[in-house]
Amino acid sequence: MAAVSHAQSGDAPLQASPQAPVPAPFAPLLMPNGSLASTGVYCHDRGPACASPGPVLPIGTQFWQERKLTGDWGGLRTALSDSGVSVHATSTTDLATVVSGGQRQGFLMPYLVDLNAALDTQRLGLWEGGRAFIDFQQAGCTQLASKYVPDWWGWDSLNPYTQNYTELAQYWYQQSFADGALKLKFGKIDSNADFGVSYTGSNFITQAAYEPGTLSMQLPTYPNQAGGGEVLFEPVKGLQGKFGFFDGSTNYYDVDSGGLGAQTGHTGLASFLWENPGSYFLIAEAGGSWQSDNLSGNVAAGWWQQTGESYGTGVNGAQGVQGPWGLYASFSQDLFKPKGGVPNEGLTAFGQFGWSPPETNPAQWSLMGGLSWQGILPGRAKDTAGLLTAWNQFSNEPSITTSAGVGEFVFEAFYNIQVTPWLGIQPDVQFVNQPSSVPSASVPDAVILTVRVAIAF
Image 1 (tube, one colour):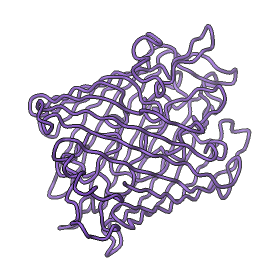
Image 2: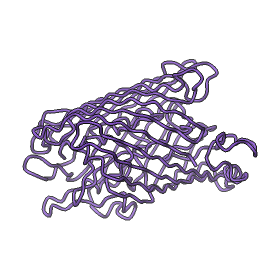
Image 3: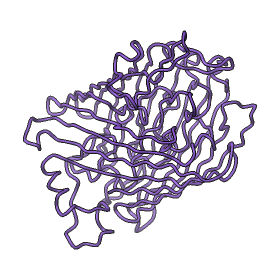
Image 4: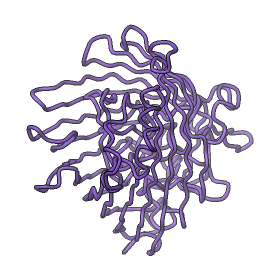
């Protein structure tokens, strides 16, 4: 694959693309290991249900004080949650302008609407330890982001890399055993919810915040979530292990016919195991989490492999690449938290590194680091500011990339204004260096201004 955004048009393949971002209103209250706390106030768009949606303001309170725009539905939302059914809806819109550089300048407007529901079998009066999750997503954009800035990671994580995207994005069931020490999950899953995650509270717009650049082509994530299974275990508190097996058909390449594999976002379990036998994605991760006083941290390391023939594009055109694989590591650490502050308030550092053999992957290694500070301004405890830098180094093999030996640099800064508990408005600036699949094309460095509007319904 050339060093270009995976946003392609026409008959080009839809490669693994950005995860659906977590909208700003009431980010999830997460444990150090990334699991949702039992008192969570907002559910991760791709994750399991919160045990409770949190307290709802009394009837008669002004609507802008409600946790969700639509309120408690006359008590129905609380009643459903108490019965084991958690329902959430979000809308996220990016008002983006490429002000200089790139292939072209101008305005575009990607958006994502997410509706999801989670069921807790124990609360439903059935069996203990069961959770089911179903997620519907509808996304689109006025113009593809890659037509403006053809970067590697994807500078706008909302962009579905097709003009329109409407999918039953996830449907899975998870069963816990041994008081939650072992969890088994099966269905159509976004693998980036459990694997390759550096910092779960991130509000960044660039996809570089959410996955290593070396995994950008292969990871079965939005909008190509895939059928698969996961084993999640925590043998002792603070020590986690994970393994995932997913349909890798999206990245399958038939050398004889030049045909591409099924897009797993469209097919889901319909293509699992039999659409392209031998094309699978495997990933394993081990990590640890800790807490000292009120400061939490975690570290993780992982291995992945895409089996069978994968898609690659070099100076001589498309070709098959046998079995790309790689390693990655990530961390996050709270640096400061005010005593008595609101959930997630404070300063957190995070980062991620990825590596892959240069003869099998257009991206040889990537590095990302950043800071996120909720409550940076006095009296604005729920506002969040962030800084991020990232680098992706391309392979020096011209047979699999047209950007042999060069790299791409990304910088992003934002300030999210939590206008109401259900409305976040986020001014954002990005700078992308070398946003081109062919260095000789001399696409200028890009500066992008965005205002993200996120609403929780």
